[in-house]
Length: 501
Image (tube, rainbow, N blue to C red; front, side, top):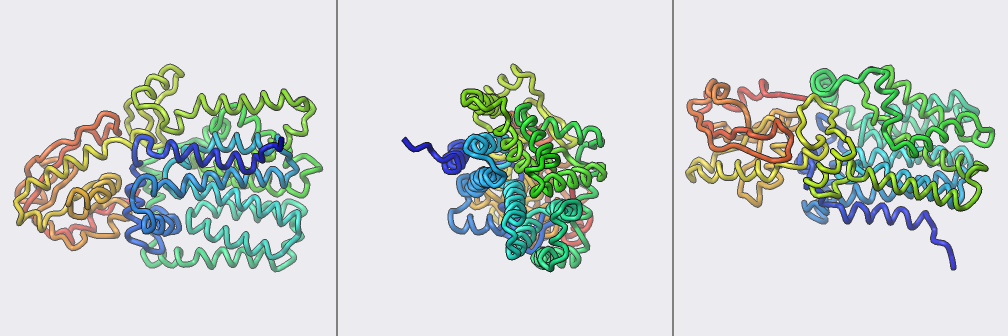
């Protein structure tokens, strides 16, 4: 009987895992915002480049706005990443065991990032694809692959600016290894020029609007995100994955940097170390920023383990893969919403897992990644009731103002079904979209206080309160107001409302 090919089975298993758990606890805060961004296509946004939004717009045009449609691309990206890890492992000399081990480890370790739509799911895929191309360039000496690499890096930059780190890592790796011979040819320079050309429209957009992303990064780093000390960043790398996968990637890094058999691919080790150093000296990097680089380190680690005499007997290899699967399934509820919320809370308490966040936000029973999937129905219902309470004449001119893109995105996502007007906000790209032609004669405001609104409006009345059981605490007990008679038009006060973070 022919053995099943892990390069086929495991990517399909990864895809199936995400398809069957696709709905989870509901859409994530950022997903609502990304839908709104995909309706306003541009060469850039305050907090991200445009590629992912263009892809989302295409998916929405084909399949609509259902959770399945929004999360189909992340699921496919996850399957493609696992497949690429298998190809990388094979290119590094790994046979069936190494391929199975690497793909299983990556498939179960990179779960949360492929559950919901964001730039991050494509980022992990792009880093793995870049590593695969670097390996092929080293092995095949085919100059035209540099152009493919340049195109991938350019598209990667149009997805996340952090691909700059990856590009610098490749440059460093070329200088520090025997692959520097390529620098005497035109091909790496053409690749860099191609990447820059693809990225150029976004840079032009940034210049034209006064570099809004730099303002966003400054505010987010200084005001929103929890400060990360250099030592915490270093230690954080050891806590990104479970102990088995951590040992696997450490083995891979050692193999790439020290083994004679990997001299041809030592550049991948230096790419990792360069990006690690860049993030370390930046002084404000999250441990997870380096996450995509572990795709190829895990692959190299699997090759190292396959060549170890300790794992030569087949039964020991079976035990290792079984342990990876067992630990991955044990920790799966922390990265994928596979349990009912009440069951998850009990499960987390039983295993001593405390709710976590990377932001300066209060938490309740759920980590922020799960809490931000709750409360949106309650929000839209409360705002909808306030809007429906207005006389017909006021509904014609009313708008809805919120103080964060999650609120505005959720309202806009459900607006057509509820007959609501467009939402406006001063947060991130919503500020760039402006007041959308509304004067402010009647505004339903989510959040704020009666005193704060009275300074801008002639009359303010409380229309309701958003209450939600498992949402982020700052979204619970949030007042909803009906404000009338704005003292200055929205257009006049709009510059004061800008809030990038």
